[in-house]
Structure formats: C-alpha cells, structure tokens
Image 1 (tube, one colour):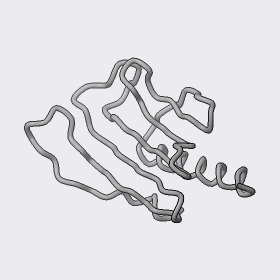
Image 2 (tube, one colour):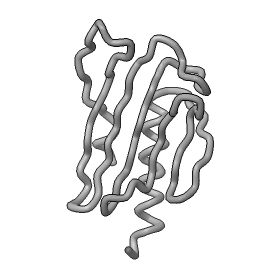
Image 3 (spheres, helix red, strand yellow):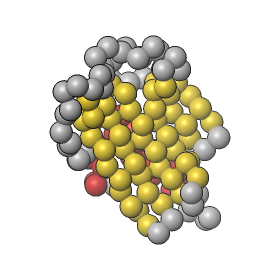
Image 4 (cartoon, one colour):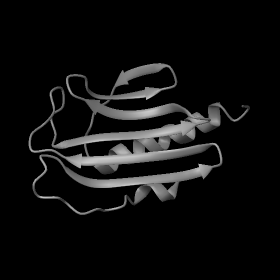
Length: 113
C-alpha cells in the first residue's frame, strides 16, 4: 500500500485547459492493479468545489471494484463494489489515503475469492 503515497509527477502542457498533475499505475498482482490520474482544472467542475479532476480505480480480474472520481455534474463520489456514495473531497493526499483504505477493505472482505 505504501506505493500509493507518492504519485508520479508529470510535466504540464501550457496550452491545455486541464494540467495533468499525476498519472500512475500500480500492479498488485497478476490479476489486480490500481490506476490514479489527477488533473488541475482552471475552475471547479459542476458538482465539485475544488480545482481538481480525478479518477482513481482499483481493478481486480478486469472489473473495477473501487473507484473515486468526480464526473461533471455528478460531483465527488466513490464506488465500492456495486454501491455508489458521495465523497467529501478535502485534499489530494486525503483522497489517496481514503482510496488506499478502501483497497485494503476490498481485499480483506474479498480474500476468499
């Protein structure tokens, strides 16, 4: 899990409306990986009150089982298995920590499969 605490930094292209801050993929096993993508946007997306657009996904056996994202109009939310709930975004660091916690929870609850 410690691997998620440091996101890969990438360059910013000045003519884009959104600036890519981080994109990384972490392979946990032959059947599980996490992908984290974070952009800085010039103004908050509809439904969000911060300057980030993000997508964090944990995929097991080709199925996304945990995801945090903020779609335009939907705002900040998280998916855990089949359920979707709103998410209170505070900082990008807290976002990654909450995502890590849900990955651990998913693995603990589904270790039999």
